[in-house]
Image (spheres, rainbow, N blue to C red):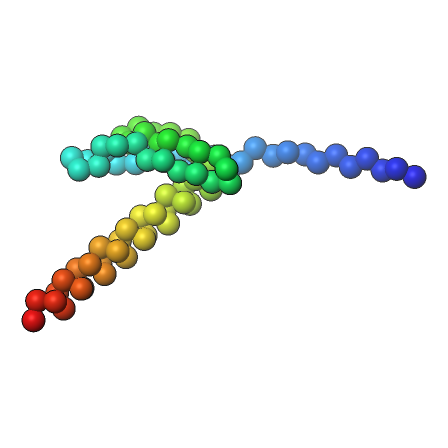
Length: 79
């Protein structure tokens, strides 16, 4: 007895984001998730899969941690 199983493919949830365009950060941002690549334009509202928004969120968190570490290391070096 053969059973056929149909799987419904759901489109990924989309979220609207806007990456800030600043004097120092003008370049588009490259993101890759599960083999798919995205090039996010700064200063424009764009809809991206939620997974891409999550990667960008983690990117910002890691940049903040790196900046805090650098500031602490610099302060400790200036005895």
